[in-house]
Length: 240
Image (cartoon, rainbow, N blue to C red; front, side):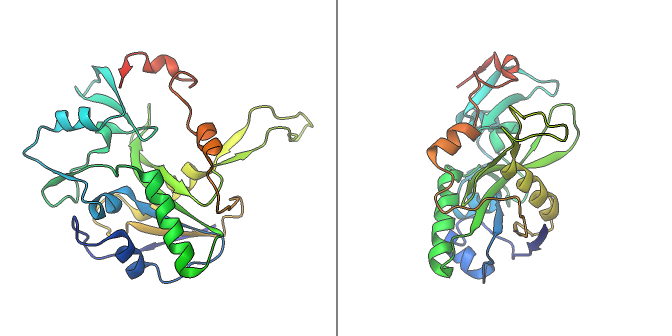
């Protein structure tokens, strides 16, 4: 697998449309490649900003899909946004030119629109699109990438029914392809002043591309509800 990052100019809110951004920085698409774009760039192009004169905790409560009733050791509320644990509902102050940057409204739909636009422009179907954000994990220091929207490929690789090295049939094992790619891309793109919010992943032979993926069934399987999650006991005090 190969990954390359693309350096861009400073992107300001409402400066470019998504199509203009794609036209400027994606000149070709190779078969079996994945285009990865940070959510911050999508948010800026969608003008998803808020003044810092607004109360940040109010914004967090307004933006979060689920929010904890209790505060953590840093006196912060834990939140779930776009089917992921993301601190502060993903509201970001870095690289915002003095404003808060909110997460995209519907990154799954945006990823599909980007795929459809590029597919039509370059007459390609065997490629994928991922929109990423960053999050912290329990019991670990530092952030990792996470996919909050994707299109053009299957998010999971199933080993169910296949045999392990001793001939035992696997019953539950599935690999999270999309978040694995997101982690790799975010690591390469960086988190500071790199100005590389775009990455291209190539030669990812383990990805199954499909112009009709993910289907509703794929999404229902990939995104686990709070009630069915193996960590559900940790979410008992979360509310919408």
